[in-house]
Picture (cartoon, rainbow, N blue to C red):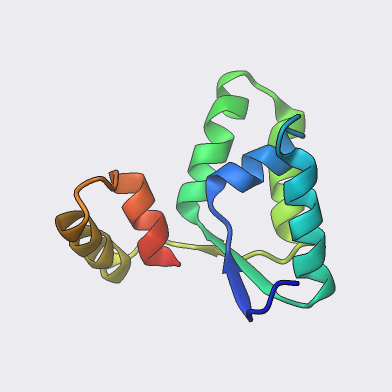
Length: 111
């Protein structure tokens, strides 16, 4: 059982769920169901939106684009914007932890 009030969704589990990944899709679906059943708030950032939608836009896959926005809307998941406060936190994360790439640091700072 998940015990928290809020969960940040990174791009990878969103991809696994929406693209029905053979290895992880069912596991992510189970976790998302538990989150929803327990009334836990889910949030993500504009980074997730950009990262997920790039390939569907490139391939003109309207179904995947629509599925993403339906998922965000149906689950009432806010997309947090990247502002100067988050950018500053991300810079501090990258300064301290050299292995973090820019997008990952922005995601963590948003969380």
